[in-house]
Image (cartoon, rainbow over all chains, first blue to last red; front, top):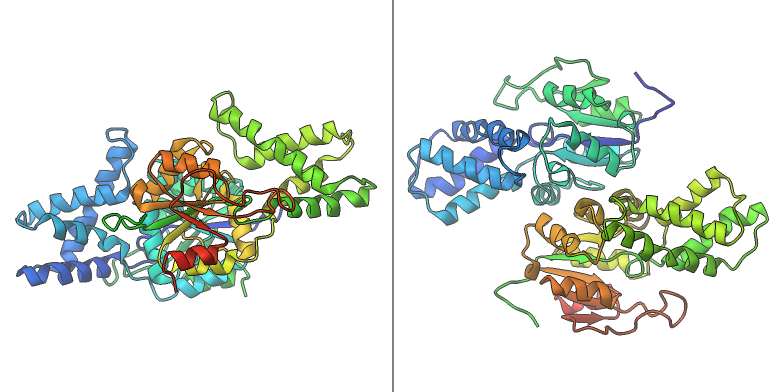
Length: 239
Length: 239
C-alpha cells in the first residue's frame, strides 16, 4: 500500500479506546469518588452510561445546534444527565467537578508509551482526538505520551468525523492528507479519515467495552492493520 | 506580585528572540545555502532585512487585509521581497524553499532547554508564538524543548499582539488569564498580554539583534524580570 512518491510524514492518533482504556479507568475513578458517599452501583455500567451520551452531545455541535464546546464541557453536561437518570441528583457540585476530570486520568493500554516513542523516531506524531487540549495534556503527562503537538477537535472547532478535524491536523503538520496516517481502533474513524484522503492504520483493541466487545478487525479497507503500536512500528520500519 | 488566590498554572512563551537566536541562525543558514551560489553579502544584514518584513506582513493579517496565513507563508512572501531588493532575483525556487525553512532550524539561547525542563515541573508550558505549529515542532525537536502543547497564532488564526492569541492559549490550558503568565524578551508582547489580564515575566536578551541591541530591561510593568529561564525558575520556586 506504500506510495513512495508520497511517503507518510505524520501519524495522527485517536485516543479514547485506541490509546487509553477509558472504561476501566472511569469505573475506577467513579468508584473512588462515589463509594465513600455510600453509593454502590455497577461502575463499569456507569462508565458505559456516561460514554453513551458522548456521540449525541458531539452531534449537537456537529449539526450546528450547539456552538463548539470543549469535550470537558460536554462531559459535564452528560454527567449531569447520567446522574439524574441513576437517581443520584444529590451528588454535590464539587464532587461532580472532580468526577468530570476523571477523563484526564485515564490509563493507557500497555504498549502505548513505548510504541509512540518508537513511532516518533520516524514520524511527527499528535493526537487527533475529540478530547480537548488540556485533557490531552494531562493524559500525556500522566502516561508519558511523547507528542509533538496536540491537534484534534479543539483546534478545528468541530468534532470528528467531520472532515475539518482531520484536515486541520494534517495541515498543521504541513502534510497533504496522503502524507498523513490516521491510527485508530474504530472503523468509523478510519473510514472518515480515508474519505478525505488520509491513509489509515487499524489497531485492534478487542476489550475496549469489556472483554471481547471491541473491534478485533477493521470493517473498512485500511492501509495497515496491527495488534498493537509495536506491531505498527514494525510494519512501518521503525527501529 | 503573587496573588495566592489565583496561582499561576501555565506559562506561555514567546519564541523568536526569547528562546531562540533567530539572527545568528538565519545568517548561518543563508550563508550555507547562498554562498555556494557565489553570493557574498553581509549575512547578519540579510537576516535583519528578512526580519524587517515580519511585522508588516502580520499586520496585513491583523488588519483583515489578508486572510490568516501561516508564518511560513508570510516568511516566503517576505523572502521574495528581500531577494528582489538585494537584486538576487536569480535565486531558484528550490533554493528559496530550502532557505524559507531556515526558520525551522534556529538555535536556542543556552539556558532554554534545561530552563524549560525546570519550569515544566511546576507549570503547563507552551509556546505562544506567531510561528506556525510545524515550525514550533521542528524547533522543539531540534532543541529539546519539552512543550506540553503547541499554542499561539495558528490555533487562534490571528497574530500577536491581538488579544485573541493570548486568550485562546490560556483557554486551551483551562486557565483564566490571571492564572497564566506570558514570558517574553519584548516589552510590547508583555504589555499586550498584561492588557488582557495575563501575568508577565520579562527575560533579558540584550544581544537579540546583535551585541547590545536587544532589550536589557522591560519598558512596561512586569510581574517578574529575569536574566534567564533559570533565573525565572528560581523566582518561581522550581527545583
